[in-house]
Image (cartoon, rainbow, N blue to C red; front, side, top):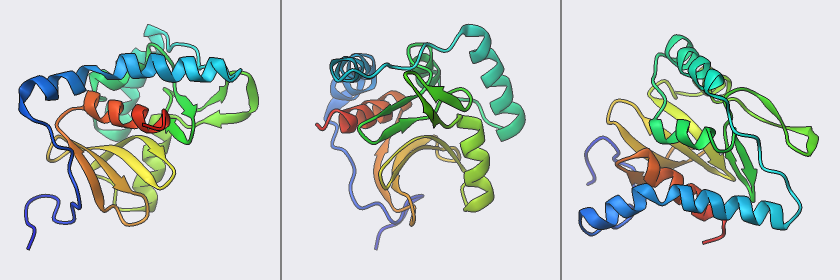
Amino acid sequence: MLSGPFPNVIRCPLLIGEEVESRTKTMWPELLSAVIKDMTDFGHKPQLPCPDSEIAELRRRARTDLGNELPPEYLALLTRVNGLNWNGLFIYASRPSRMEGRPDLTISGVVEINQAYRRAVCMDDYLVLADWDTDIYAHHIPTNTFLVTSKPSLVVLETYADCGSLLAFALRTALGE
């Protein structure tokens, strides 16, 4: 019988040694660049970077409205693109925003989507940063781990020790890797 904080884990990434774990943690910027290149190659515009003043306001709102700090890697990603919608991956923006080049579509804000998740399902222990198809990418606050879970059942599919590795996994998914 499985035990621990996630008894319903069905698979975990295999990381061998600190070098591989460190490499995975720092890969997200180059993967984000690859996603942006794919987007522009197909004629789509990435979101503009989130200004520092808006990052400061987002941090304040996350503390006040959610009672949580946002991971530094997630905030760093927002300074490059304020949200992402590509190939089924949605990385939430600093606030609900119209998509660049597609004013008929929006990207959810991270505070607003977390408020909705917390009202609708038992997600008070999570900080949801992104989703893809039937998966949620989230920080499990009590254990300080980063998870990929299935949307309806919250079955844990992947676990990561840091947000950078979670973002790398999400961006690889958007690239079809």
